[in-house]
Image (cartoon, rainbow, N blue to C red; front, top):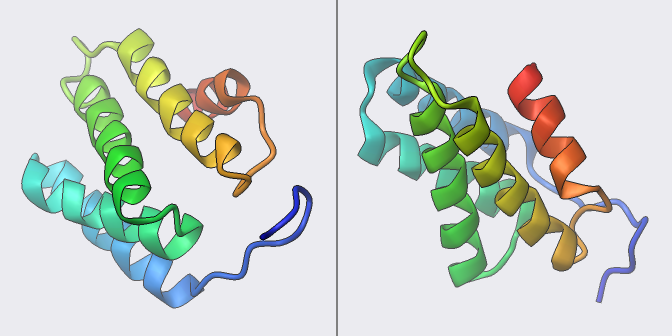
Length: 109
């Protein structure tokens, strides 16, 4: 069991490939492929288990869908979904963050 504060080993190439695929799908509004890319990012970056990966990736997808229809987007919904994502990662010990603060920073970026 990994303790808080320990570094999580991950494959940066696999994360990068998944993130690249996710962003390409985001700009095409290809939501099934966006979900697949988010699932890869979460799986390779956080290793939350089968259901944890899927639920976390779902929140990443939903946050991006809330953000996508610029300028008529919904930043509050994007923050809520990202806070849920960061909350899952925090509760499993994969991160040590305040989920709301992390979500605020993520959406503000």
